Length: 313
Image 1 (cartoon, rainbow, N blue to C red):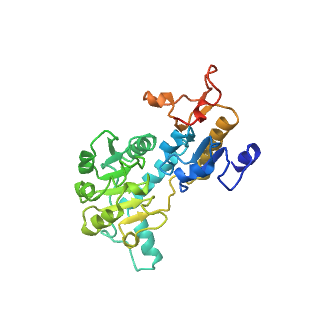
Image 2: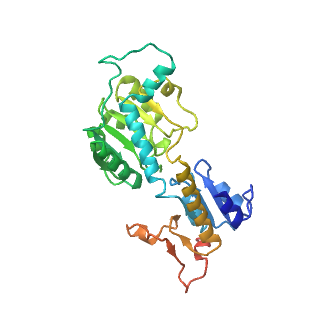
Image 3: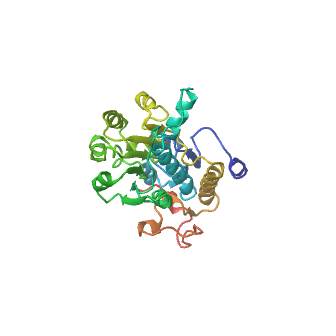
């Protein structure tokens, strides 16, 4: 990916005067950053599918294209989600820690009994690409999926699910979507899994629910104050923690990088809107359909070559 970037673009460490930005999901592209970049900034290509690190409204006001990296990380993130679910239910990480502590153990009929995913109700909050793939993989293990989208009440899912797995974007509406009241609606035998964004879960409320036995366990790949982890979570045996590994395979990260580079190339070198743009939204998305496969929609010939780069009054 970096070869492609350095071949096609002049790179710089500073923001002032740049035409494009390649941002990781931990880098905040806020109003002050956009101001410092200046009026020549034409595109922010986000190295990730979530765009909660970017002030989309501010970018749109300035006529800046924002692109993300959908699809290529769907299977990888879904695989990790299932891995966390199975690790939690079958107590894999707990058993690993026991052995590494060199504690005495031997096979016994009642030793470290866990739960099977087979026969469980898998509650998917956010049935987008990743959520639907998690449901598909869960079905292979014998789980039955139920769903809650952004226009659905979440309460029935929380009450019915044995595993609640989060796959919605982090927005002002979903921040702390899983808080004390939501956790109280879950079964005491249920577990919570989060591979979406840490801010969707109120970690203080989660710690309280785990301490009180309100829910049976949690598996978290993302964290509210990442990379800091709540100390009380670190001490809990019924919690599995990973360091934001959802898309972390070499092939997936390379594919994400190439999508980001292709978006930069589309805007800065080819004068067209990339199909994987978030701002301005693709017409197919506005109409409730997915973008076309090849993603090459040239700008209409009877319009200025870069109308979408001009500030919106």
